[in-house]
Structures are given as C-alpha cells and as structure tokens.
Amino acid sequence: MDQVSLLIILTAALITPLVMAKFKLTVLPTAVVEILVGIMLGPSLFNIVHTNDTLTLLSNTGVIFLMFLSGMEIDFSLFNRRKQPQTPLAAKVAGSAPKYSPVFIAVTSYVAVAASALLLGFICKWTGLFKDPWLAAIIFMTISLGIVIATLKEKELLSKPFGQTILLIAALGEIIPLFALTIYASIFGKGGKSLWLLLLVFLAAGILFRRFKPFFTFFERINKSTTQLDIRLAFFLIFSMVVIAESVGAEGILGAFVAGIVMKLLQPQEDTRTRLDGIGYGFFIPMFFMMSGVELNLRTLLSDSATLLLIPAFLVAYLLAKAAVYFILRLRFKRGNAFAGMAITSATITMVLAVLQVAKTMKVVTSQQSGAFLLAAILTCVLGPLLFNTGYTAEAEDLKKSTVHFIGTNLLTVPVAQQLADSWYDISMYTDKQANYKTYNSEVNVSLLDSLDTDYVTDQNVFDADIVVLGHFNANKNYELAKAAKAYGVNRVIVRFEDRNVLDEREDELTDLGIEVYNTPNVNIAMLRSLIEAPTTLRMMTASSSAVYEVALRNRRYTDQQIRNLDFVGDITISQIFRNGHFVRPTGSTMLKFNDRIIFTSTPEKAREIRRELGILN
Image 1 (cartoon, one colour):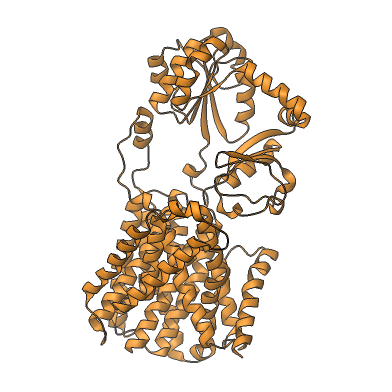
Image 2 (cartoon, rainbow, N blue to C red):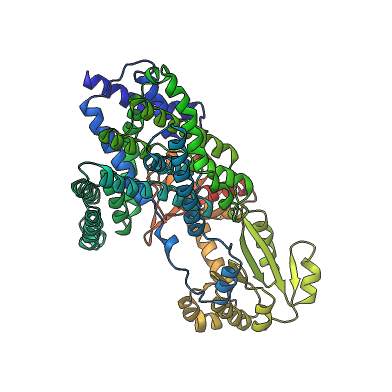
C-alpha cells in the first residue's frame, strides 16, 4: 500500500504541470496547485493516498531542500554598502537613483509586519480565539519564501528591484520566525536547550564555508559526470547543518536554510544551481507540497463549528499582518504593484507547518486550531499569487531602453541609428556640422553641437549614455572623444578609424582601455571573405526582412535546454554560440548554457522579443 500511495503522488506530480501547461493555468504558482491536488488525493476528497513512513520521509526531505534552495536565492550584493561612484557618470546615475533601496524597504516592511503580528497575537488572546499570543504572532509573521520565489520566477522578476524587495521581505518572513520559534521552544518547551547553543549552528556554517571555500576552483579540474562532486557537496552541507541544528535544539529547516547560504557564498557554477533546482523542484519539493495537502482532512475540520469560526478569523489576521507592507512599498513602487507585493507576502505555508509541528509537540495548540491555522494559510497561498498575478504590471525603471548616443552624423551612422530606433534602444545623434544637421534632422533625432571639444561635449551630456558610438570622419577627434567618454564612465565606447596609420598607432591603447574599435576597410574585407566562404552569411546580414543579432543568455528558464526544444526555434537561425572564450558550432541537440553569447538571425520584430526573453536575468 505504501508503494501505491507513492506511485499516485509521483503520477500526480508529473501530470499536474502538464495539465497546467495544457490549459494555460498561470494564475496560481505550481506549488499552490500541488497543495490543492494533495487535498483532493487525501482524506478530504478521494482518500486514495495515505500517510506512511516513506512519504513522510520524502516530504520532510522536500521541506529541507526547499529551505536550502531558498537560502541560495538570497542576493547578498544587495546588502553591500554602496560604494562611492568612481566616475562622473556613475555619480550622476547614483544621484538619480531611487531614494529608497530594496534593503531599506524590505527591512522596514518586515519590522511593520512583526509589530502587526504581535498586536494581532494579543488580540487573539483578548478575544479568546487563541490563548498563546507569542505563538500566534510567530505564525502571523511568517511568509512562504517558496511560494514567493515560485511566483517571482514565473513573472521573471527576481533580478528586478521590485522582485528583490519582495524576495528580501519573504526571506525575513522565514528566517525571523525560525529564530523566534527556536527561542520560543527554548523558553517555553520542557526539553528546550540553552539559546547560546544556536551560535554553534553559525559557527559550524563558518567552519564549513572556510573549509570548502576553494572547492569550486579545484572542482573545475577534477569534475567528472560520474562523480557529480558539487551535488555531493550540496547534500553534505544540507544534512550536516540539519543534524547540527537539531542537535542544539533548533529546527532542522533553520540548518537547511543556513546550508543554502553557505552554498551560495561558495559561488557554485550556474550548472550546479540548475541541477540542484532539478533535483529539488523535480522530486522532493513537490512531495512536500502534495503531502501538506494530503495531511489536511477538510471533512473533519469543516464539521466543527468552532473551526469554521477560526478559519476566517485567522485568514483575516494573516492578511492584516501584512497590510503595512502596502504603504511602505508605495515609497518606491506604483500603487498596483504595492498592492500586489502586499498580496504575495500574505502567502504563507512552509513555516506555518513547522510552527504547528512544534506547537503540537509542546501541546499548546488543539487539532481544531491547528487545522484552522493551516487551512487559512492555504487560502492565503491561493489568494496571494492570484492577486499578485492579476495586479502586477512592469515598473517604469524595468522598461527603460538602452541609451545609445552617436557622435558624427553621416551616411554610415544615420542608417544604423534609424534601424536601432525601431528596437529596444533610445537613440540620439550629435554633429558639429551645420550642413549635416540640416540634411538629417528630419530623419533622426539630431542635435547640433557648437564644437567637439571634450569639455563642451561632456557639459552637453553627450556622454550620458549606455553606449557611445564615435562615427566622425576625423580620426584624431574620435580618439580624444573615445578616451574622454571612457574616463567619464560610459560602459561601452565604440570608435571608428578610417585612417589605418592612426589605427595602428592607437588600437592597442584603446583596446586596453576597454574601447571597441572598428575600421570600414577591415569590415569590408571580412564581409567579402564571408561572402566567399559562407554565401548565406552576407545575405542574412543585409536582408531587409532579417538581420544578425547577438544576446547573452541570462534567463535560467532556457539554460540546459536543447536548441531544438526552444519555443521560438522556428523564428530564428542560430549561427554561432560564443562560450568560455570559444565558438561552438550549434546543432539541434546543442545544450544552451548560462552566459552563452548567441549569434542568430531573425526579423527585427521577433529578434526584439527574443533578445528580451533570453537576456532577462532570472
């Protein structure tokens, strides 16, 4: 019978995402649907899956793995102290940056959540709904990091300021209750251990970090597909920290979360992270979510009138505890997104299960109260993502185009500017020649400069761009402006040299400064060679209906995926992949890797969409 229940759960875990994809059920994250499927399979409805030792072990491993991956999701660069800008452009960008950082908003939000939860805990005691205000406060201040991460991933928001803010709030919503629960159990529990023993968890984490700090440098030289040492290290860290945490009286999920932080700080390869995600979200984590639903018996809960009163009361408390998040998010984000952020932070399940498990052991919660807390938490997992997905829209800062400034308006630069203006670029052109200004002003956005003196150009904000292209005919002037632009802090400077003598003298100097140099005769030679060796290359590059594009693969949704399996494979032709300093000749079975530079041909409309999709850091 144990094997039958396991087979049913595994079948459901396979079918659930397929059905969601078939019917385009994107309003709820997969994790929430898996909980609902578990409720249907358990005693609440069909009663075909029964809890047993095997499923309990796999479910417990699932929550541990979920907390481990949650620890790996934290972007510690957000906590770095802001460095003083090193260039004038960096200083100007920093000066125009939003006043409130994601860290400030997240910490302030969670302080408000904790205060609200504590107040609601004492209200529960005063009204007689629940006698232990401290335990109620811990439950109300929890946030499901797993649900939040799944929702943000599906919206591709983890790399955006809004996504990082919500992620930090959710991280605090799991780690703070973890500490609070440990302290609560140590003070009020009969078998509680001394609080100072918690320090041993972090001491052990520090020792493991120092011991394995050079691991991935060494791993590069000895890695074999038959050993998978990085995955072995991950499991070693997980269970080492879980055992240590439980040995000192803390919760195992605290140890798993700290293990994830250690793994993150070790800076594993993207490949390692992808495979760990595969193991977790492919097997263990769905088991945890489904078994959470299986273990909930709605028939028993809903037959008790006292429970029917508690469920809406606890649901309202979960929502009210996060209400202040809306007002704090409004300090930086628009109204609809502040509401969406408040809604998704209301979702809670993982820590509620952990808190209730401890509370049952300490016998401070009844089965009716436990069921009401849990069912109300499941309702937040349905409402939170639903309201988030319907309420979120892109922030203006996320839609900002890359700024490209051309210095030099002529037959070479104007057609390029016209084509780029139709894609994801904000184009401006500058010239010091009155005749060129009159000729091209009606066709592109051209500004007339009094001179090309570097100080004057800088004062006119010409270098305030992501990319500066120097396409002037005067090689010496291009040389001076290129160095000035790079010193000002422009990320990419592209400079044109038609005089081969000047190019030979200064190419190495400019290249060392990170300036990109091109020469029309060299480009023509390369194109003619391509025409001879690969006739279709020139046709692709010059065709009016298609062009050659390049994008760095940052979206993890497409890593470790064969080219033939890409959703848009019929809309593009991938000619080259630049990986780790070498070109890879692609075939249909070629696996894409994180940070691959993909050179492809497509129509401008499709290319714009594909570049945005592949280039999103997620």
